[in-house]
Length: 139
Length: 139
Image 1 (cartoon, each protein chain N blue to C red):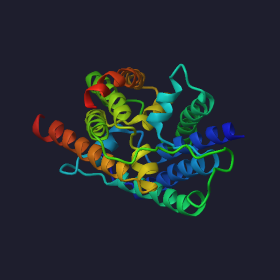
Image 2 (cartoon, chains in turn purple, green):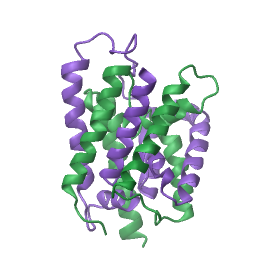
Image 3 (tube, one colour):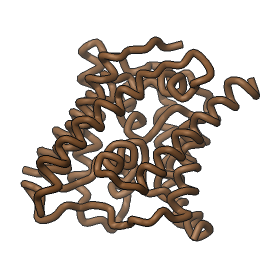
């Protein structure tokens, strides 16, 4: 059952990214370009997503000890703001600013037809595999 | 240039938020795409199937939406350098920084995580700064 849930949630996520046009890197870059022809759309994507998530979390998740279809919530345990978080987020920000693509939209674009998305995902996977080496430097 | 699209942005955002909430409420999982992808390509990972189903779902959802009039870009309008460098940095940064736009920006902030608030502010301002440099300083 929770495999069907994962698939359906993925479908909904992909629809959301496409309807919101976060799949268009130029729209993302125009959102990040506040001193240019600023397109504030993505602020509303985040607002809409956070609205539902916060409501759902407070009402149906936080009071519970486990999810409906599994034995536990798989939540991050780290609480402290460490060097890895700061350095990693800055590196991610540079990559996002250079390309206008973050991981979700990268996957959503796979059926779009531009082969460059495969190059992006390939480079992203290489980056992920290289990250343990660089992570040692930030410790 | 892209125009401000408040309704589609909000509706898309609501869909993304609903997807992320359902995945947490039902399966107890965080809809952080960089984490899901990284876990999906690990050899020694016990919970592979839901990750690949969620990824498949994103691709299918985006494909369905593109057939209903919400387009996927057939041309990303990015250079090969931007795609390769961007992808590589997104891969490294999201692993060292423990999350991306979805994991920190929605799921983390939505649960009131201070780490995620800091991470999101950092990657957003960094990405904005990079876009400022690439569009207004080094053009």
